[in-house]
Length: 217
Image (cartoon, rainbow, N blue to C red; front, side):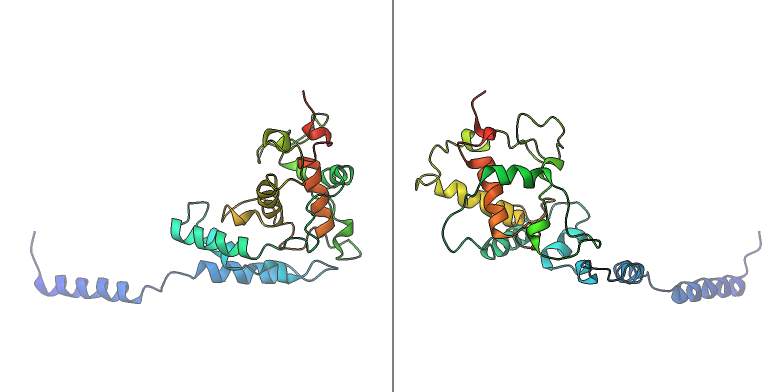
């Protein structure tokens, strides 16, 4: 085979020119944001601001289901915990009967709802958790909450000994990212899905010794 230095150098120059002309990789994050913005519209109480991510949501999205660096995860969880709002009256438990209704109710926050007021919203808790023994249709994405209070020794919710468990549980319902930066659980209080009184009712459902959730087998 004959070797032609001139032709070889010309070919190399063409290849290098082609490489230099290769366009940069697309900004897929920007393209995705643009696609979402163009694919949805304000409708009723469902507004486009729901597409906006805060720092925690953005970090977890970028992780693509992977584990965040420990330092970053800790910082995000601490920020979430600091923003949790506890009731001004200091009472963390409501009526467990109302809590059961909320746990069974999956409605709310859709574009067809007439008002953004949380009073009509549900918690849809059985979608991810076992709670009462009577309910046989429940999800398993989250851990079982059956006998949640009983297993934690809550015999008197007003006791100072019970307070740390109650406050931990309140924070988990208000914003579960207080303890798990990329938790899949809805941030019921933080995002305004449920109001303070509704969260008190859910607290009673899983913590009140009188709730059937904590009845002895």
